[in-house]
Length: 70
Image 1: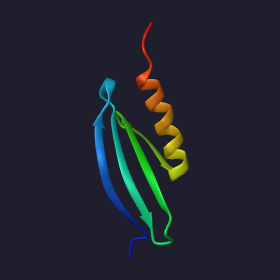
Image 2: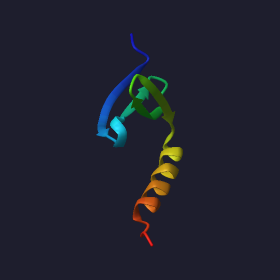
Image 3: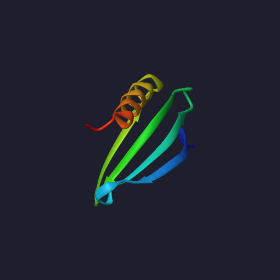
Image 4: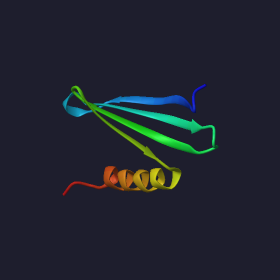
């Protein structure tokens, strides 16, 4: 029996041929994580982050995306 339930949230085509996938990972220990998979060619980076970290990243990205260029 699997130790986690993985639910795909979204897949994003990013610049330079990169692919980003976000998944919700629920462990049977009631721990819930956000899995970020970044594919660059044949190379993968996988991050499992908690809710607090996701909120901090989200806030920083939203602030950056909302900045006006001079």
